[in-house]
Length: 102
Figure 1 (spheres, rainbow, N blue to C red):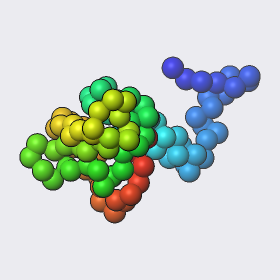
Figure 2 (cartoon, rainbow, N blue to C red):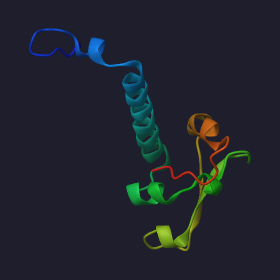
Figure 3 (spheres, rainbow, N blue to C red):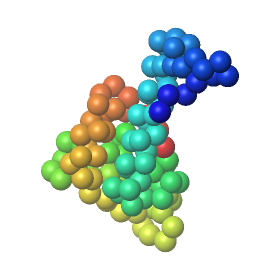
């Protein structure tokens, strides 16, 4: 589908390179958030509370540590991460240890 302005000109032609790159990065980030929510079954607030330091991507199997304060009625837990999600998260772990995920 091509989005056009009132004159029928495709809007994609008017977006500069920086804007297109920013939109692609935003879309990638949103898709990563949704994939993480589905594959981990975490709630939005729980996912938002995670930092890269809580992800143990080099372990076998990879897992994350959810603090007790971030869970509803639990003393904290370790959640095993699927390989596909780990592959998406690994590039983020290079150089941004305290970056918030959600």
